[in-house]
Length: 463
Image 1 (cartoon, rainbow, N blue to C red):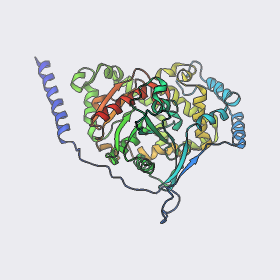
Image 2: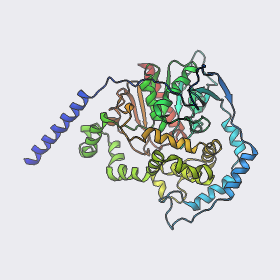
Image 3: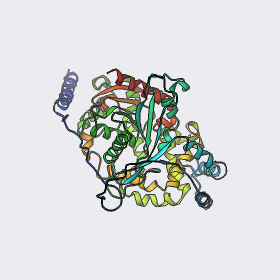
Image 4: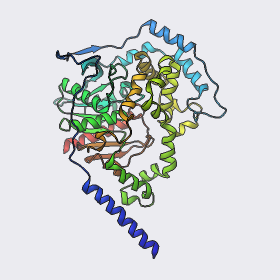
């Protein structure tokens, strides 16, 4: 009898807390557009050059010779016996990767692949912004393409989207429905790849969202869709917060919900969700991915988040060696493409890297970081966004009201159930559990991500 009464009381308290949360939480805040200047020195009084300039990625023989010289001077350390990838990148396998990089990898061939899509640069708020702009080649008669802004994260680049672009711009040729055909714009985040880094402190995700908003306006798109994971997820979310009348739909393959709006629901569902999943709208798949919470979420994040603390506090110090050693850079970045793709890859001698990717694709991403010298500026983005602490930014408490779609991949760093996502994204019209895939969804599973984007946009169009 006592147990029954206690349970009823507990459930009443939980229900009351949840009800209070939904009734009294703020839902009318807006995120201001703002303005900025990230170029060197003071903002010039003259009008900014808004021209859009064609751009081609090129590499000199001197740059390649310098790379090879540095590779040849690498000092390796022997891995612990049986450590596989549990101590980080296994140096025995690293030797294999570097040997291929030095002797088998054809960068000139990869350059042709990279340059097959049109590249451009334009100056926004004092810095050059690089982007690719791919229009459909087989657009059905009488139809118009839907513009979609796709934003990468760290340690990725615009190259992450090269495999998904054909499914979006020419779906019929790739066995997909051509009901939804897209015009794809993929910018490089400032400080990543071939986008100029900010010369000033404070260029965070909201500032970048505004820069990309200005980019889309400059390209002539008043309304458009957005898609992203990792930092791209946050940037696209911020874009939906500052320009909700322009963003027709927001599609995410990673959702990280923080701020005062979500803390209570998250805490309650972590404490009681495994035993009472229905009370928190948790599906069987949510429970499978989240519980036991200590091992599947907490300890996993502890193992995978050391880099974040370094980059959110002293990125310039941590980045010095990476900017000088190509092999160090490769090990640091490629380790993420191992364990963020599948946590079980830690127990493989080769980190499972070639189970989802080719060495050509992985090394192409590394070359983008190396030749642009962008590793330090890319790492600074963590300090700009979370250096003041999680939950400190205004955008974390501003609700997202544009139509939202979520593709939830099973091997993402942290699973966000629909119940959590709804605390911030209040107009979710599509939430689907993907059958496979991890953090780098567009790179790993381009076809199933493209299908999910298509069905989401179709739902938005019907509303």
